[in-house]
Image (cartoon, rainbow, N blue to C red; front, side):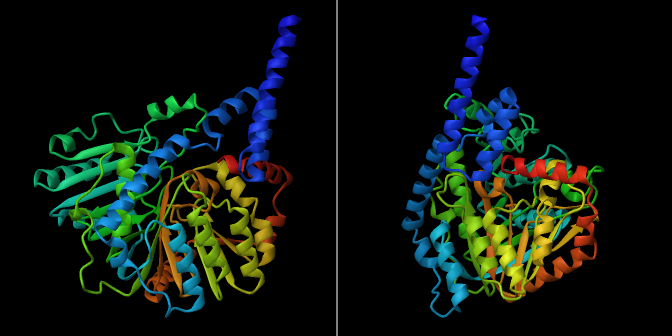
Length: 482
């Protein structure tokens, strides 16, 4: 009896401590409720999950990334990059100024003008364009992905980088330790033997060492960046793997979107890579070769804001930019997101836009790689549809693109999904472009995707059975943990 009483006392004390921590940490009320439920109904499993991925603390990783930010910021001033790239906003219309001012407060680099952006709409097009650009490199190639698979696509990328390294080009590769955990330990050895460098962001062993300090281990780097000679850059939603070519039988056709950038905005992506590289390796890329002054010519007419976001930030930059752009919409907001679990601010902005007559459309996958995410996402459908938001479900395979276009004014391509993980937990990157030509291309691609989608209507919602509604509700309660 004494042992039982002691065990109960310890369990109650343990639970009380966890609940106290949850209630005193600065997190969304829905996330607090989700964790309380997990701990109450799954006492052991819930508590272990909380220790692994529940605490909001990120002191050690934030210390590394903040130190990296400070060092690279010093390089920005040293090479005069901010003065070279800053664009004046006085001549822009009010809503353009509003978005640019917000971006300048949240992003590491100011918006730049005279850029050109090319939209790449699938893995084959992206890999071909990136490989062609890498093949032209004469000084350096910086590559960063969340996922690199050890299949034919990953080997092809590695072999290309090995060839460039043997030519004397400085090659650096950074992958996320969790996203690319399937890579063999010696996968990058041929590159290193050729003089290149490879590193992993936030290795698992380092994360587990932080476990005893109650710091969660799932702050991952979800960015996708390729920079060639500081002049050409790629970013978007595509990683490196056969599935991105539509060769995974389980997923089938894979619809994704990436972008190729030229112009002064490339420095913004280079800076982000430099920070992540320093945070992972302690190597500071202190050389003007990595930050070349923009050439005195116009690459295009796109005004580009590079937005970097992560759990080390006080505010969520990408979430705030999305919310502001939606709030400033006048005609149309068209969003594609494979994982659509909107925050309260995004949901409110979408509802308000639809209620005032804006054409709001959201494209999500019919078939997802996560059943729980699909259930959670669908729990928002009814309220959004009743407000006037149109929901479309992509049926020709899996749509993995993360894009938004507002009117003919601003468009975005990036790595971030519209969910809690992307806004608050992952290191993400997005480019926001104010350019009618670019937005027209995004609109055209969205309309092309709708040809392979079915609209989910209020009648579909009314036909959802009780069992599925219960599963949706449970998944929604757990959505802050996804």
